[in-house]
Amino acid sequence: MAFLVAGTLQAASQLADAQDSLGRKGEYSLQGSRVALTLSSHGVSTATVAALDYVFRSLGFENCEKKKTSVQCFLEELVWFREQLDAHKGPVGCALVALVAPSGQLRHVQLLVRELSHCGALRGCPKVFLLLSSGCGAAPEPGVFLTGLRELCGRSPHWSLLRLLTELFCRVAEESTGDTYCPFFQSSLRGALCLGGVEPWMPEPEPSPRAQYDLLGVKAALLLAVIQDRPGAQHDVKALGDLCRALGFKITLRMDPTAQGFQAELAQFRERLDTYRGPVSCALVALMAHGGPQGQLLGADGQEVQPEALVQELSHCRALRGRPKIFLLQSCRGGNRDAGVGPVALPWYWRWLRTPLAIPTQADVLQIHTDAQGSPSRDPIPGSSDQADILTVYAATEGCVAYRDEKGSDLIQTLVEVLRANPRGDLLELLTEVNRRVCELDVLGPDCNELRKACLEIRSSLRRRLCLQA
Image (cartoon, rainbow, N blue to C red; front, side, top):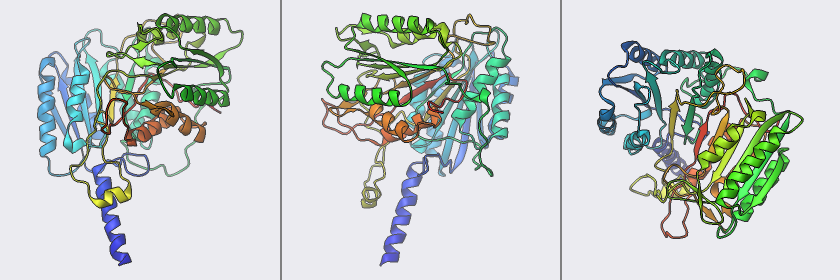
C-alpha cells in the first residue's frame, strides 16, 4: 500500500512539473523542444536574419521559423505561430521570438507579447522576445549584440540569461563611441533561465571588481508613501524602512505627498545627493500610492503624476552617473484583474502537493530591447546614457491591479522577506525569486470575491551585478 501511494505521488509530482516547467529548484527545466521565430520587415538585411538563425541554433533552438513581412503583419504571423505551437503534440520547453524592423517602426509590442502569453503549449514556459532595429541609424548593429550574446552563452553556459544580458549591456556600452542608446530588458520570469542548460563543474569564481557595482560609498533611500485610504500601507513603510536601515541606507521618509510633492521630493533628493562631499554609490526610491488607469501615481490630493517623470528626475543626478538607481513602485497600473491560466480539472493530488493551480497570464516573459534611446550623459564614459544603470520594479504588469491588504502589499512584504534571508545575493536573482513567490499567491481584491493572480514586472538597464550588502 505504501509503495502504491509513493508511486502515485511520484506520478503526481511529475505531472505537476510537466504543467509548469519552472520545476522545484527555481530554474526553468526547458524540457521539450526549443522553438524560435524571426519576423523581419522589408529592408532588414539577410545578414541580420542569418546571424539570428546562427545564434538561435547555437543556443539549442532546433525549430527556427523565418518570415519576412511588413510590421503591420507581425501580429497575424504570431497568431499563426501560437496556433502551430498549440497543435504541436510534443512538449515545448521555451520559445524565442525575434522582431526585427528599421529603427522606430516597432510599435504596440505589448499586443504581440500578449498573443503568445495565451499560448496553451507555453503555459508556465519562458517566452523570450528579442527586439532589434536594423538599417540606417540603428544602434547597436544587431550583429554586434548577437555576437556578444552568443560568445557569453558559450563562455558561461550555466549563467542565467538575466546575468548574461547585464554583462552584455556593459560590454556593448564599453565598445560604443558616443552613442546614446541604452539596452534594457523587461522580465516577469519566475526563475532562472539558463539556455546553456549545464551545471558548473566547479565553484563559481568571485566576480571581478569590474563586474559588480562598488557600494562602498553612501547608499541613500527615499521612501514616499501615501498612507491615507490605503490600509496596510503603514506596514509596508515600516518593513521597508527597517530593511533599508539593515542594509546600510540613509533614509528620507515622507508620508502622504501630493502629486506635486512627489516631484518636489525627488528634486530635493537629487540636489542633496549632488551636494554630498563623499561618493554616492547607490540610490533607492520607493513610491507607494494608488495608481491611475494608465499607470499614473495618485498623490494624497488625488492628482496624478507620471512615474516616468520621477525616474527621469533622478537619472539626471550627477552623483549617480554610472551608479545603480533602484525604483520600487507599489501601485496599480490599470484596472485589469488576472484570473491566471491553469488546468481545467482539479485532481485531488494537486491539492495534496500544493501545486499552484494557476499562473499569472503575463508571467514567464522576457523582453530584450536592444536600442532604446536615452539622452547623452555629461560624463566621459563611452556609451553612457541617462537611462543606464536603472532598475525598476513594478508591483503589477502593465494595465493590471496591484494587491495590498491590512498586512501590507504583496511586493513589499515578499521583497523584505527575501532580502532579509539573503542580503548578499544578486539583486536581479532575488527579485526573480520575489516574483515567483508573488505569482504563487492567490489574492482577493477589495471589490472582487474571486481569486486573482499577481505578477511583477522587473525592468533593468543595469550594467553590472548588484549586491546590496558586501
